[in-house]
Image 1 (tube, rainbow, N blue to C red):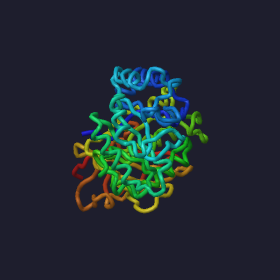
Image 2: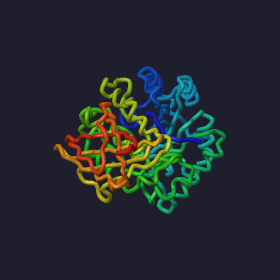
Image 3: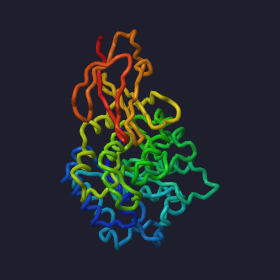
Length: 375
């Protein structure tokens, strides 16, 4: 089964957009190994849009741009596989990709077979330039079937930006992850708005098909294709922790050949990745319900009879957040409490019951892992 836990990897778009090449992808694969990202669980190296020529070849196939990829895609796939990693590519459900290159509308089966021949392990499938009379869900069903008939196991990453109430039907197409948001950019407001928009859709995400709330901007520091101000290292940690708690796929978007130590520590944080990759794949439950303001408190069941309790402050000033344990199904009459450990500091904070009050810094969070104990 593909995607027993959320897929993890790297995608070229956030930093490089059309400025991609064989050399870049090979150097990125090298860096995935040398920095320890591969060992931390990141396994997919994915080319986004702009990898081909502007027109299909005489045989009807999409042609890799020889100036960018002089040895072709099979050569690149073999190199990436040789590093113990998996290779991902991009296409689109419309007649043209978002950047205007040949796409897979009405070519789904031949393109899927071509991707399999290349050695592709992951397909990001975008939603630009769809003919107005074409049915969006049907187009994703078509590519899902095409990938299944390609002769190779290929992870299907559906990217329709939340159109057509995608969360209600995308699992039936065979997709393993689905974009449910617009594009993220590198600033705190963009990141937080995207996260808040998905709070009422968390229950649709589960083992085998995950809500992809877009690629990480951790470590971009206002550089690259989606630069819109950047964030501090603490804000990037907030971003990463929230994506992990919401069990989104973790697709790195920064240039990992040039990461700071702080960025690497965030992207490889073992306890946060452990939450993201939890085998039970339970959704995060928002205690407040409804529309999320500056405060967000979430609760989550984890494997091994453990639980996650997290507090996120989207506001700029410190706020004291309060969690009533009644709201997680643990009234004081139960005689039970939670023995909690701080995920970031590693320190035990004791047994909490009935309620919990936590001071949370502006643009900061507190996250605890716990077990039920008798009072």
